[in-house]
Length: 486
Image (cartoon, rainbow, N blue to C red):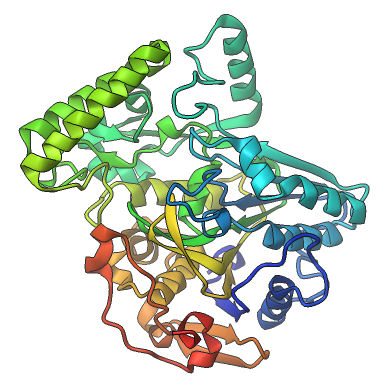
């Protein structure tokens, strides 16, 4: 197996807290955990990326910047990658480039994310200012890769081919300059279910655009060119539960390298019994809702504000009625029987890692200092897990996350298929034979089989509880802050 997808995984435990600005001061638990992580990995703690990128190079940081606010009222600590971790990783990247390279930090959040608000709440401007004060010659770019935006869920799109001529020119220029159209064709993981491609959907986007890019023999993605032009890509996801995928970590975070969500199948319209994976049982009212939902989002960009509001109200009433009749609230593939999202996720991971023009090296450092549990990824409840997880191979990083969260890994399709599917190029040792390297807060090291990692007892999404394994504590609680407090 090449070094690019070496399956070794490293876990460093930490106090489950972040420092506020200024980052990097004495006693910063994130920096201390990172230092132990690099040492565990066999890297120079003062210059861990040496040899992976050099002077004048280019580094891309891909955080989880999914949304500007947590709808359940919690702050954003469990929602997005914390800026203190981004700052320290960016600082190490600048050191490796001797302060003279290009650093890009970017993501494609949800269409309703208020990017400027998110940047302010995450204190990204202060982070960038502190970084530039340490490395004055470093070029730093913070980028929003979305091509389709909404303001507050009802404003018109800033980018999109359905806009005015002037905006169309902006869109076309940005499309051509900043994105690569990649067709995986029959090698796509979606090809095995391509006979249902006319029913591929992603919520709150135009169905016809999805159909234009996914069909038997054609599976197109629109990927930021930054992943092609970077020497080193550092994936910095947030450790969270996920209502469609079970968990989001190394692999799911890379869905954000795609500029148009309309290229990303998330589920198949219809009930499980009818060949879909949107919900379980057939229901005439739910079918009516699906049809109305498609029509609404197909025309959304052209609708006046009043029609949008009325449309949302009508859909909400129809949705409630269908729930009462069916006694089922599963929707949009948000359950453990989703057969679509793992395929899209693995497609994008293969594009990043295995194209001819892929970056020389990709690595992952997962932010699990304060993780997210419950109905993630958009409404997580803070879980003070107190850990960082890192490695080259995203499949094995996510297998470790799944085990720590208390999942049966074989029931998390993204992870299971990344390790065992015939098409997966991430496959390596069987998880039955896989060991993980750990460092606790005191610096004590150990190597344990993945099955012996402790279960940190994350609260699972409602429709993923069948994937939860029975709780059995494994190794000393003092190494695991989430258990030590219980």
